[in-house]
Image 1 (cartoon, rainbow, N blue to C red):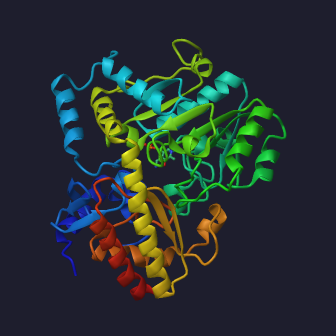
Image 2: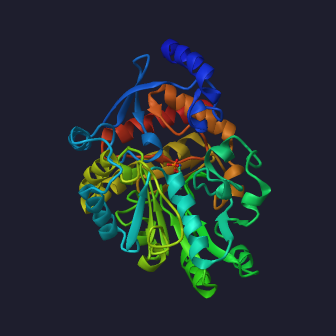
Image 3: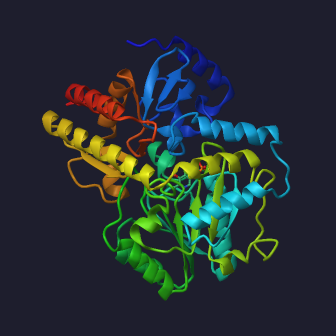
Length: 426
Ligand code: PMP
């Protein structure tokens, strides 16, 4: 039994300060039970908790840490930027450097704006889509998560799904009155959503990662592009997770579908608070001060976040993505062997370095099938893995991540732990 007395004591104190003892719901381990471990330090692929236990980290701060923890070049870039001033509220060259790097990698983002979180990016993109088109309807995917802006908190994934909340109190009926929710991978339902011709935009994670990781059916994203074109509605790709994760150009590069607007976060901020939304130059002209759609932020384009993002993007070349794919393949092969040996019914989903192990006998293709996966079994698996020093997402409906700091032997350690964990829970 690992010692957790310091984490337990910290959680006691935290609960007196923060709802649920946390500053973001899923951190509370509500879906898997038990007391969350308090992390004290991270280096490369490893984290250490407040009691000194160490874990191989396959959560990566929920996606940002594609280079692993405290990468020396990222730390050095942040230090250098901090020495020159942490915030100005004025324009700096670093914003242009990161903006140019993003546009080179994601050409559909002809112009963009920096914000401080993924939530701000999607919230602003939705406002822009409405302001630009003059329409109000927003179509989102059931189980899709785009942060916690009111409009997008209908049938949301991630923590909302994990906590089993049917809807979010405090969000007025008016705020979601024009939000149309359709199942993923269902072209007919999407087509029907366009019926009354008031759709400003479809917002979608092209590879949903907040109902666990689910892939689009062949042709699905292309069909969405065609429908949006036919109805003069905008297509917004929320690539907060998939951007700079599944390939340098994101899911839009992988599937060859060009959205009108793209939202980024996580990897692009190198572990610092950063989001971006951007797209067609003409649409971006509607953003203030060029246009009538207001959007602003005291810390937007923050120098430390710019520096961290630039340092990470510099490392993400073709070789990096080949390496991540090779590590992903190794994990997939190992887990599939372990599953076969254990007889446990499960679906292992993977796109590059992102993965989810669904404890489900049936294919998982949308939110309904994701929710039918055995969350109780996942909870047992999670704790068996944690006890063996492997840190995973604390919910069945989330996504795990491999980083460039992981080695083959780290992957093999994951697989070995899984073999034992699966035999215990089978
Ligand atoms: N979009 C997606 C696809 C996300 O996964 C998340 C966060 N997990 C967000 C938006 C919101 O980002 P943030 O938590 O930085 O506000």
